[in-house]
Image 1 (spheres, rainbow, N blue to C red):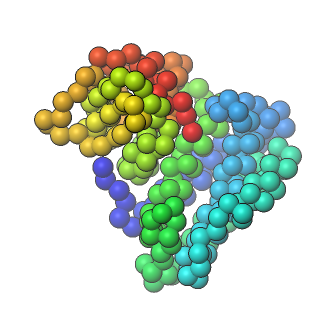
Image 2: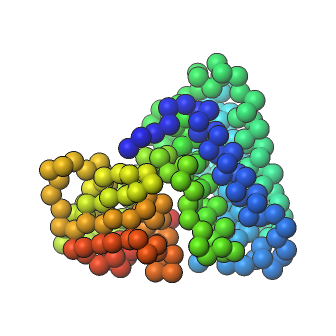
Length: 262
């Protein structure tokens, strides 16, 4: 799976996702802010709040890497979440757009040498700046879709950031994939972009890896890359499944149940 090589490329993708988010939030009244998002546990405003608090937390990560400090932990995150959760819906919407823009502005202000030298030990891995931004891209793209799809049921994930999101997908599959008694191997073929992937399901959970010509499998799944991403993120219900999806050797509902969402 390809990944972006520079923080500038990742930052451009974050700017584009920010623009989509702002467009989706622009002009919302209180009723629409309180409306159910795609996530059945969060309103539109609550999804925006999650992105806003995330912008604050990623800003802390950014500063820690610049100053050589340790990454902040849960004792720092919880008060941020509490503050955002206490906001009224329209305030959550407005402040989310502002916080997201402020994070991008701080990134834009970095000198080339600062961006090149940036590192942080985060989630058990020493990350460079491009790596940090790839984490933000995945959550930003998916949660922005959670909002956009409320007003546009035909919305799909944009193609431009899918290389990054696909690169993060093995981690998400391991984290969200449910265990099953009987092992099942699935060859996955995606379009836009084209990828050949191998999905192993079984008693230990789910594992996603690149596929090779001699990879044996019990089933095959062919679909747009954005639809596969949404499947692993628990967002490929029947009403939002493209007609081009084909599957043999396993029922698509079995795969949906394996990935309940995050």
